Length: 226
Image 1 (cartoon, one colour):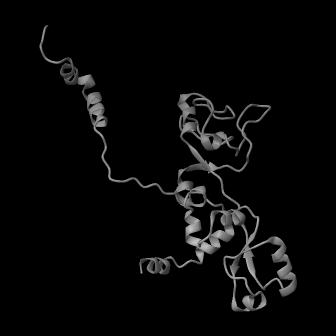
Image 2 (cartoon, rainbow, N blue to C red; image 1 turned 90 degrees about the vertical axis):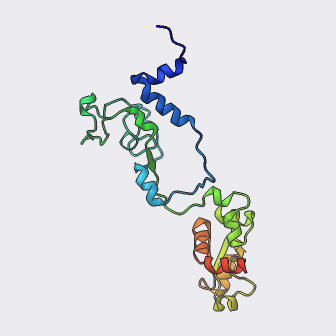
Image 3 (cartoon, helix red, strand yellow; image 1 turned 180 degrees about the vertical axis):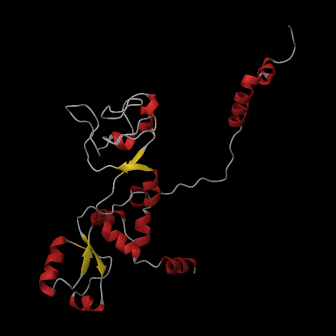
């Protein structure tokens, strides 16, 4: 049968493809937005996304060629390496889909879930995020009124930073105030001369976190707006 109607309109009226065309038309329309915001996920949210904690740096066992348990490729965390088969082979085939093996702890599901699942690592000590440390201008540096080089010396354990300088400490160690950088040799010398309690110093991201924690951001915001 001949018709002068467009071919596209005939296809759109065909029932099996009607829903498909609806999906394509919907995605063809551009999504408009005024702004986009990116922020770091909280530790609680990261643990919520995670399927388990990675505790070892190993990847694949050199003898069995299987992922190491609790390692970076762990099947218990990220999923099986073969479709519908657990790591130990106790459960195989699709009829056991969704079952978690009581022997190896691997869920029987598709292997492609390994592309989607996330694990997490519990850090023994805090670290500085590169976005806020290395970004120009350095956000941490702006808050603490420190240069990038000064932050590097603290975070890379090259020099100490003064965390607390009380009246008593200032009297014992004149010329040193809070947030000053002090070399390892100088700290050792000051502690020998004035005692270990004369000055509170720190290194690494833990020291930076303590300095940030001591800040009064509300007061700082009022001063900047004044």
